[in-house]
Picture 1 (cartoon, rainbow, N blue to C red):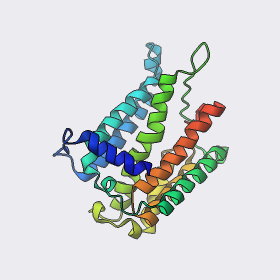
Picture 2: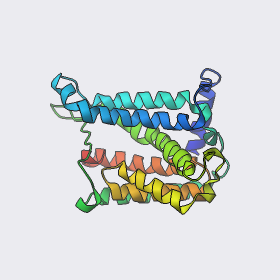
Picture 3: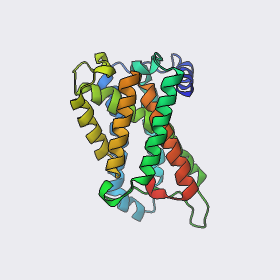
Picture 4: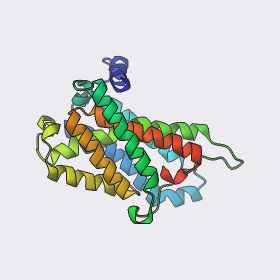
Length: 244
């Protein structure tokens, strides 16, 4: 499986070169990358117009965001104990996770309705002035969309917050015993993070169900990745830039 291979490859590459940061606890290791990701969004929202007036192409803030969050995930990798656990990742569970991701993708591109959205989409248009695509921008966008975001968000939303709502010692909380209260609160907050809030709500519930049933964080990561790979492919094929 790709997720297992990815985890093993990262462990092998890192070896002893990146020790777990001693002063960062399990909660902070999951919150900091997410907070960094959100900080870049806030920066563009507050100062984007001013930066563009100074001649800066703010689309490159996404590349900086992807690199920063990717580095933090690598730096804290040894803290993510559940990503070193491959129990439960069997053919049937991977298929279910993948199908879930496909269903969420199909719903996502069909739920851009006025009642199911809030605010304005954060459109990312990688086209060049003279036509064609800036493929380096596309690369960083796809890197973030299909690899960094699924890992970062699942570590924050599912691994940390979902279980932290139920128990202070969230690492000891069995995903199969997560309460309906925690599922509802976490899904609602996950929905609020997205312009397409209703699609975000469905995605949050679907990924949580995959996590709760499979009891392994790699499974919702697989679902999330499949959804985002589908989105990336569809956006590039249709030029529907508002979807990312």
